[in-house]
Length: 214
Image (tube, rainbow, N blue to C red):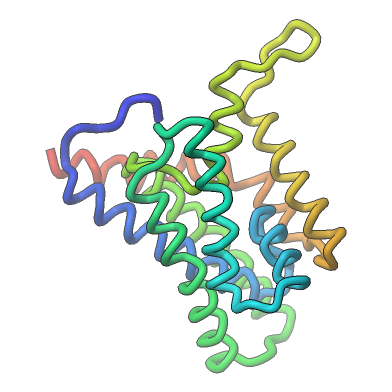
C-alpha cells in the first residue's frame, strides 16, 4: 500500500467500514465453530486469559499499544481503517459471538464445520474489501509490512513479506499457546488458504466494486 488511491473516497470509506465490520462478525463465527481462530485472535485470547477485561476493551487496548509502535515505525500504514479496527472490531466480535451463542447454542460437528467454512469465507471477503479500500491497515498488519519494507536479508537473500508474516503469526500463536490458548485446525486452515481466497475475492468482488465507481 505504498500509494494511496486518490479517487472514490466515499466508496472506499464504506468498503473499509463494511470490511472491518464483517471481519469482526467472521471472528465471532470462528469462535463459535470451536476450531480455533486466526493467529492474532489467538494472541488476544491468550492475553484475555490473564487480564480480566471484556474482549472488546482488551482488543482495543492491545491495538492501541501496537498503534504507538506503528507510529514510530511507519506512519504511512495508519489510516481510517486502523481506527475502525481499533474501536469497532473487538466489540463486533463480542456482540456477534454472544448473539450466535443465543441463536444456535452448542452445535454438533456438522454445524461447527459450516461455521468454520463461513468464517473463513467472510474473513477473506472482509480482507479483500479492507485492502482495496486502501485507507490504512490494522495495527497488527502494519508491523510485518514495515519490516518487509526494510527488506531484511537472511543468508544474502531478501526475506519476503509472506515469510515475515508467517513468523509474526507463529509468534502470536506461540504466545497464545503459552497463555493457555490451544490452536485449532481453523488456525492452520486460515494460514494455508486465506492468501489465495483473499486474492480471488479482490479480483471478483472488491476490485470490480471499486472500479464501478469510476
